[in-house]
Length: 111
Image (cartoon, rainbow, N blue to C red; front, side):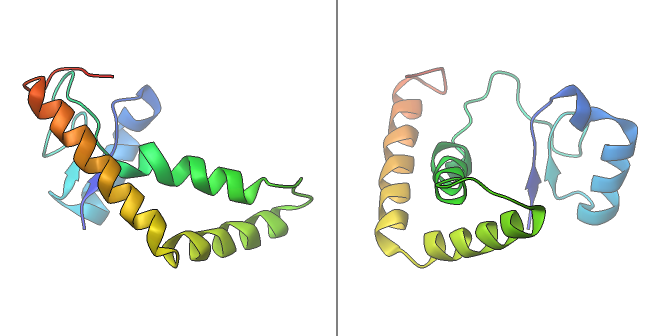
């Protein structure tokens, strides 16, 4: 498994980098890491484009009343997403589209 993160200032502290080195060794990508995050590189991560938005929609479909309820909803919603194959077909299709656009722009930005 690899860990990937952006260069946000809270993610760049010495304590965070030491933690990542301890748990992931040379298998993490990011600012100050063993594999640097390339400047201005396109982010094609499917979690950013689908998973987090969909998970948030499922979890917060109605108001959450406690931390315990939030934890239960997160676990339940992740189960729904991972057990629904049409979602993964959409993820694959969307990723393929973004990779194609990125390639057409020679790795540059695209909308």
